[in-house]
Length: 86
Image 1 (cartoon, one colour):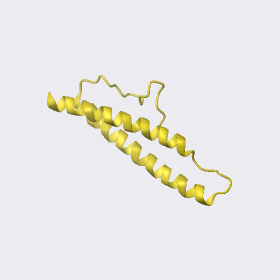
Image 2 (cartoon, one colour):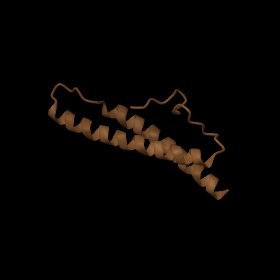
Image 3 (cartoon, rainbow, N blue to C red):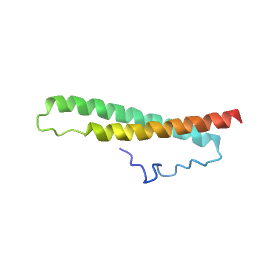
């Protein structure tokens, strides 16, 4: 899983970037990260069902991370719209 920096941004992520391509790049990145987390959540739930010792990923952590990624994705979608609206 990719770790967010303290301020909630990934390395090299610049919310003030003046380049429209950057917004598209980060939309793709965050969509992919969300897909990975969705898969991890599904695997974790399946493992939890068959693992009485509880050796599976914490769903709360996965959901918190997914919410952060979704928030960043929405930010970049808004930025892309700003660029397209000119």
